[in-house]
Every structure is written in C-alpha cells, then in structure tokens.
Length: 144
Length: 144
Image (tube, rainbow over all chains, first blue to last red; front, top):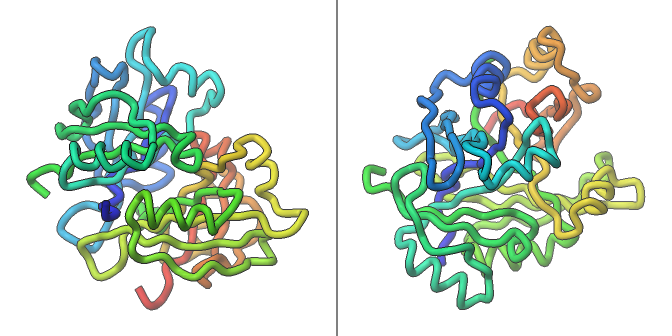
C-alpha cells in the first residue's frame, strides 16, 4: 500500500454548534460545511475545511458529536468531557484491496467496509495495531 | 485570525524507529525525514510527509519521542503506552500577532514563542481552552 492523502482528522466534541463557534471565531475557519447525521454510525458530523495550495481542500477537521444513546463515542466523551482528537483518516484508491493488505499484515480491521461521511466506503483499523491511533481508511471520492 | 494551513499532526511514540517502520511498511509512506533532537523541548522528532496536490507537501505527521528524563511527554506515554495523537499545528503569517489575538480571546498561551521543529517560532495553546486539543501555532517557514 502507498500512503494516500490525509483526508481528515476526526475530533470528538460534546456540541457541534459550540465547536463551529470555536473553529470560526477562534481559529478563523472560513469554510465550514453543514452538519449532518450518520445514524448508522450513531454520530452527527460536520467538516471544517483547512486551506491548501492545490485544487482539493487541505486536510479537513471532522467534528463528531454523539447521535442517540448507543453512540460509540459516548465512552470517549466520558473520558474526555471537552472532546479531543479521535482518529486520522487516509485515502486509498481501492477499499477492498486496502482491507486485504491490512489483514495480511495482521492488523485488526473493525468490521466490513461501509459508507462513510464522504459517501465512499471506509473501515477503521484497531488503534492497538496502529501505534495507539484509531485509523480510518476511506476510498477516495470519485470527484477528487 | 484566518485559519492557516494544517502543517502537521503531532503523534507521540515510545520509539521513533518503530514508528518509522509502521509508517513505511504498514501505511506506505515514501517520504520520511531524518529524525533529530530538540533538546530545549525535551523531544526527538521525525516528520513523515503525506501526499498533496500542490507544491508544498500535505499535512505532515510529526513523530515525537521523549528525550531525557525531564521530557514533557513522559506523562502522555504513561497514560498511553503505545503512543497516540498529541497535538495539531496550524500555520500563521505572524506569530506575535497570533499570540496577541489568542490572548485577547482569553486563551491560555503556554509560554513565549520559541523556535520549533521547522525552525520558525511556535507556541502552544492550552487544550482546555481549545476543545480538548493541544493546539500548536507556528509561523509559516519562509521557503513555503
């Protein structure tokens, strides 16, 4: 596998509206997408663009808020009430071959590829196999 | 302040050589800089480049290993023995005006600007004022 573009950093927050205030008013972000629900994953998300030289945006900040009582990120917020860095996400050209490569290296892929926040297939790799970092792998959107 | 380029994500590791193996062999990084010591900050660092469209590299991964017994990141490793995400770093055109702006907003800037890993002035802002994220602000290198 060849390292792909760092698509986004996932940041957990107890409140996307409060985080939007932070990124707009404190950090000076000028391009913040509309928040939306990902009910299958139990989260609400919102992407903040960062500037870059090229035609695609820079690495995005993905704000993640729990959606529903069974959201998998309640535990993270219980440990980190203010929120914080949650995962990093790299692009690959083909999600299924990436999954095979990680598994061949003995890395624990968490579940089958499923549709992620950018509408393409994604999977996560266990942080204990990835230097303590929950690592998301996503197929590059076709419009990039 | 206007949001600047996401220069790097700081990732703590108990061993830079092991992390280099991870980023090269598992993640497929092809551009990994030579590690070097930052004795004034009690860390050894190593930058991993990620791909991007433009003339500058994508957001880098900064691997950080403790240097010396007083390294400020021993505490992080005590809590996270495998390592993990530690901070995010954004560029600004002028470090001193950025510091004034953060302070005017009541954000705790941790110490005076000092030379960081890219040779330009940097400071950190307290994670409790930044949505749980230790946030580094660095002056854009002149060669960018």
